[in-house]
Image 1 (tube, rainbow, N blue to C red):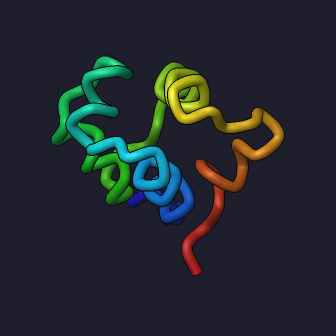
Image 2: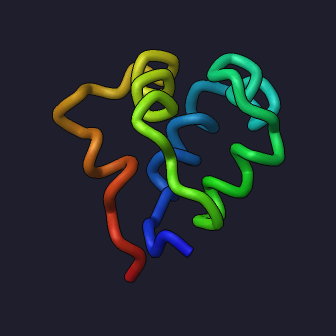
Length: 72
Protein backbone atom coordinates (compact mmCIF):
# COMPACT_ATOMS: atom_id res chain seq x y z
CA UNK A 1 0.00 0.00 0.00
CA UNK A 2 1.19 3.48 -0.79
CA UNK A 3 -0.38 5.17 2.23
CA UNK A 4 -1.42 8.11 0.09
CA UNK A 5 -4.83 9.80 0.16
CA UNK A 6 -6.13 10.23 -3.38
CA UNK A 7 -9.50 11.72 -2.42
CA UNK A 8 -8.56 15.09 -3.98
CA UNK A 9 -7.68 13.32 -7.22
CA UNK A 10 -10.93 11.35 -7.20
CA UNK A 11 -12.84 14.54 -6.47
CA UNK A 12 -11.22 16.36 -9.39
CA UNK A 13 -12.21 13.55 -11.77
CA UNK A 14 -15.76 13.68 -10.45
CA UNK A 15 -15.83 17.48 -10.66
CA UNK A 16 -14.95 17.22 -14.35
CA UNK A 17 -17.54 14.48 -14.91
CA UNK A 18 -14.93 11.90 -15.94
CA UNK A 19 -15.33 8.21 -15.18
CA UNK A 20 -12.42 6.00 -14.20
CA UNK A 21 -12.81 4.27 -17.56
CA UNK A 22 -12.49 7.57 -19.46
CA UNK A 23 -9.51 8.74 -17.42
CA UNK A 24 -7.75 5.40 -17.77
CA UNK A 25 -8.21 5.39 -21.55
CA UNK A 26 -6.91 8.95 -21.85
CA UNK A 27 -3.74 8.27 -19.86
CA UNK A 28 -3.09 4.87 -21.43
CA UNK A 29 -3.73 2.45 -18.57
CA UNK A 30 -6.48 -0.07 -17.96
CA UNK A 31 -9.42 0.89 -15.79
CA UNK A 32 -8.43 -1.77 -13.26
CA UNK A 33 -4.86 -0.38 -13.10
CA UNK A 34 -6.19 3.11 -12.43
CA UNK A 35 -8.54 1.83 -9.74
CA UNK A 36 -5.71 -0.12 -8.09
CA UNK A 37 -3.51 2.98 -8.11
CA UNK A 38 -6.31 5.05 -6.59
CA UNK A 39 -6.74 2.34 -3.95
CA UNK A 40 -3.03 2.60 -3.10
CA UNK A 41 -2.14 -0.89 -4.33
CA UNK A 42 0.27 0.56 -6.90
CA UNK A 43 2.05 3.89 -7.06
CA UNK A 44 1.47 6.46 -9.77
CA UNK A 45 4.49 6.64 -12.08
CA UNK A 46 5.83 10.03 -13.10
CA UNK A 47 4.38 9.69 -16.61
CA UNK A 48 0.94 8.86 -15.09
CA UNK A 49 1.16 11.98 -12.94
CA UNK A 50 2.21 14.14 -15.91
CA UNK A 51 -0.72 12.89 -18.00
CA UNK A 52 -3.23 13.31 -15.16
CA UNK A 53 -2.02 16.83 -14.41
CA UNK A 54 -2.63 17.78 -18.04
CA UNK A 55 -5.92 15.95 -18.38
CA UNK A 56 -7.41 17.23 -15.13
CA UNK A 57 -6.02 20.76 -15.34
CA UNK A 58 -4.10 20.45 -12.09
CA UNK A 59 -1.73 23.31 -11.38
CA UNK A 60 1.81 21.96 -11.01
CA UNK A 61 2.05 23.76 -7.65
CA UNK A 62 -0.77 21.51 -6.39
CA UNK A 63 0.70 18.14 -7.41
CA UNK A 64 1.58 17.31 -3.81
CA UNK A 65 -2.00 17.82 -2.71
CA UNK A 66 -3.29 15.38 -5.32
CA UNK A 67 -0.55 12.73 -5.38
CA UNK A 68 1.57 12.94 -2.23
CA UNK A 69 -0.88 13.60 0.59
CA UNK A 70 -0.46 10.89 3.25
CA UNK A 71 -3.50 9.11 4.58
CA UNK A 72 -4.56 10.26 8.04
